Amino acid sequence: MFGVKSSYKPKVSESKGIEKLKELTSKLPVLGGAVEEVPVDCGTVFRWNIFTECGVKVTKMFCSAGVEMEEHVHPEDIIAIVYKGSVFITINGEEHLLRRGSFLHIERNSVVSFRCLEDCIGIHIFIS
Image (cartoon, rainbow, N blue to C red; front, side):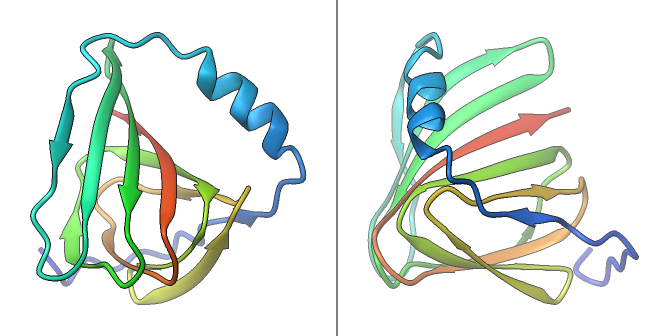
C-alpha cells in the first residue's frame, strides 16, 4: 500500500483570492456539521463534516502547530485548501509547502503525510 508510485505531479497554486475563498466556503451548506476529534500523538486535530452528497465530501479541519500525520492513502481525489497557517504535505515522497491561500490536488491512492508548521485551518474536498 505504501509502495504506490506515480508520475503525477501535483500543482501547488498560491492564491491572492483568500477573501473569495472565505466567501465561497461560508456559503457551503452545513449538513450534519458533526465535529470529530482525530486522534494524534501530539497536538490537536478537529474535523467538521460540512457536506456529503453524490460522491463529494467537504470537510473543514483544524490542526495545531506541530501535528504530524503519518503516511496514509485515500481512495478519493482530494483538493486541499489552506485557509490559515502553513503545512508541509508529502505526496508519494515529494514534499510541498502550502501556506494561507494555497491549494493542492492529491490524486486518489497517493501516499500522503503532513506536518503543520503553525496552527492550520483547511478545507478538504474528497471526490469519489
